[in-house]
Image 1: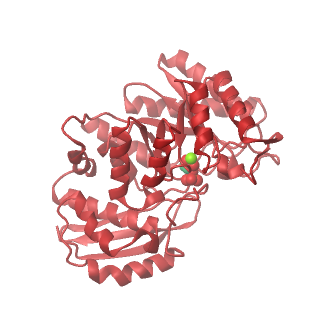
Image 2: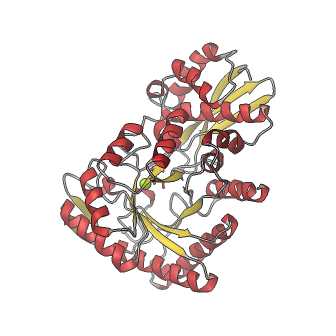
Amino acid sequence: MDIKEISAKKVYDSRKEPTICVFVKTEAGSFLTSSPSGKSKGKYETPAFAGNVDESIKLLEKLSPKIKGMRIEQFSDLEKIESIIKKNEIGANTLYALEASILKALAYEQRKQLWELLIKDMGKNTGKRMPFPIGSIIEGGLHTRYTAGKRADFQEFLIIPKAGKFSDNVEIMQKAHDLAKDKLKRRNGLGRLSDENAWSTRLNDESCLDVLNETRNNLESEKSVKVDIGIDVAASGFYSPDIYQYKNPEMLLSSKEQLNYIHGLINTFNVFYVEDPFNEEDFKSFKDLREKSGEMPLIVGDDLTASHIDRFAHALKSKSIDAVIIKPNQNGSLLEIKKLIDMAKKYKIITIMSHRSGETTDSTIADLAFGWQTDYIKTGVMGAEREAKLKRLMEIEKSL
Ligand code: 2PG
Ligand code: MG
């Protein structure tokens, strides 16, 4: 397949913030991908743009003649692109959208779905397992506005249903969203929808966990299926300086106290999944929590690892995590994202493909999750941007 032309335009995400959509033209047609954007960005993420969206578009136009005519025949040919376009100069959102569009064009030329193109490089023994979805039900921190002057300090309260079928899990997540709404209302704590279309609330973290735990218990007995719950603490968002500064209720916790606090919540509410419980520099506390909590909760790195191989390798060496969040636009290079997934699988670290809080209706990450066989996908529950990924995975499940 030969690239005839590349171009880009500015589009707006679910937060009405500008992001980029990249088009790749070939003999067969035009293929496009738009990039999401985060709010709670890790310090170690690749910058999203070359300054801003407009500057990224200009730079891409300038580099376009060097890409014109380039032949792409397999995934690894993205190296040719990356020898010309550097992620730190053009921005991760631009490079990611460009590479994803190229792969869509290549898949089309080979009469394959995008996931089929990707799964081919996963080795002979790779099965075709649907990922378990992880959906945000209540949100606090940087993902919400205040409700009656308050919000939860943790960023996300998550539901993780474990039915055998992906489509059943989607239904359970949607039911959880409804149930939690009623429970919040009864506690006089229901706010508006948050950035990811979860519920905002004036309730504190412990009350949110209580609501979530009750929701899970209801669903487990109604559906006779295992349902796990989780939190994304996004602790870097309220760590300053050298102390965890809670607002709801007000408390200042040292790292040691934070560890004991989180450990207590894991036990009280039977929490299965704990993302970024500490500041993004603190590999040691992640490890200490892992050791203290034993088998049960998955300790998950997001801001800690920032979808970069060196950060992930550090987390591996220091035994800090059980699972890793993969956000393609935290890095920009799909070659590196694939390497990171291969490495995680090799060392038996659980992989979680993830959306961003600012999303478009682009569903590329659904194909990346299935094609690269990640264990989970974290992509929300409600709203067109979140449902686009869930629908795409249900479509894939149906086609198998
Ligand atoms: C996270 C993400 C997605 P953001 O922290 O896991 O939920 O948030 O995109 O704002 O970084
Ligand atoms: Mg996170």
